[in-house]
Image 1 (cartoon, one colour):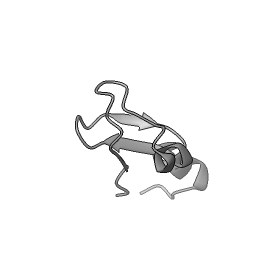
Image 2 (cartoon, one colour):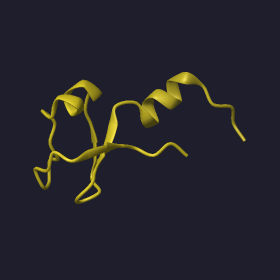
Image 3 (cartoon, one colour):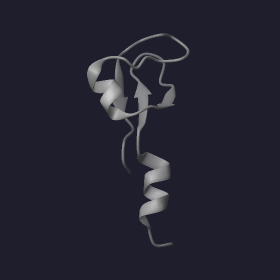
Image 4 (cartoon, one colour):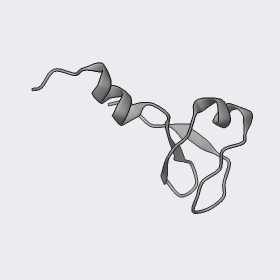
Length: 54
């Protein structure tokens, strides 16, 4: 198995959130999500959660 390096982890998991309604992934700064200013592109929901880290 390949070793994990910080650039790859940032690319795959940093600032990626998943819509709780339609399960769409969106890359948005976490500050906007915390303030409630980020919304889903497809369903316009503001209910976002961080992507699960495997």
